[in-house]
Image (cartoon, rainbow, N blue to C red; front, side):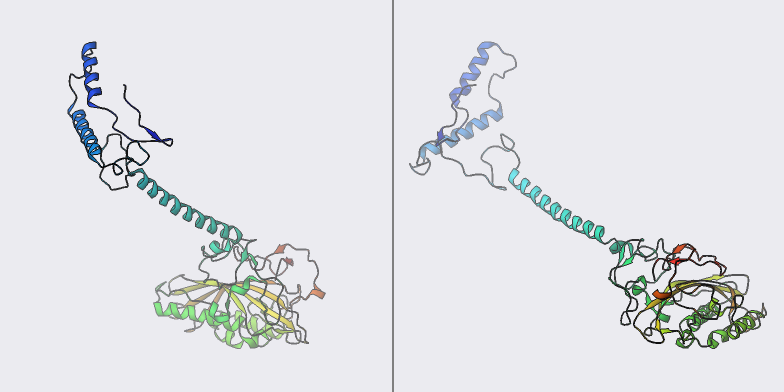
Length: 412
């Protein structure tokens, strides 16, 4: 196909009509003479429309005054670049495409939004990589995997057994009298009795919801009286805790505990149920004991409400004779209590029976059965022959030591 190329002005191509009437007539004449069957004898309706449009544009260009229709440098006038939404001078779809600038702009905006989202995601991933506790602390159990740093934010209540031991503390340094839980996972635990939250009560084992509420409340009262009463911690008698127990349902338990308090021995040692320290040896550093654990309600036999409690208590202590060095003794207890229906069982209304109890004690002297816990200070610390244990790990069952195993704690 012949025809003139657009003129160039200073190396820039100028636009002009790409086909003239003479060229169209010559093309048709040549096609007819060649006998081609595939070439139409006359221009299509679309070709005629395009040709008429181009002829009108040429006529307008010739009628235009000098300096308006032509560029001052000569050549065909350049069209202004068509913007999105403007009407096209050529039929839609003919040598035209979509408004690519607008589409490209949209794509660019999407790319920018995607880039911002990508940067934000990268920042989050980087933060989690540095501090996995940002995520794991809200997983069931509320603890972090071992080896990761914990923050100082309070933990939510424990509702299920953790999947791993809590991580190392963020703060450097050990405990002080002003900060007795520094460097310990217990820093994030709740204080004292507030940490012992009661689950929702419900009617079980043929007993009412009110009976279940009483069983839960009495169990908490026992735990507080046995492990958090300042007088008991300071070596006093746990009279309030003993008064909650049923003398009718358990003929032997109360006499055995009272005997252990009078004449402690390896067979009758009151620290199995009560957290007591020798006041001549140590005293509590401050007035806070940290507590972590959970309580569950269940029904046993008809007329028997069962409450299972699993709690760890952390006691910061200093020597009674003075000094600023703080040692922490950790005690984990599991206890299962029963509230019995007096109409079905030999029981005293409102009193608890203890079905079972277990205890693991950490950072206390081994093979001492004088009715007290004895925190070990650096000058008395020796390497024990038993296994190493993390006292803050609540992910497993209590160790069944039967009072004979003595190991090493990995931290206090």
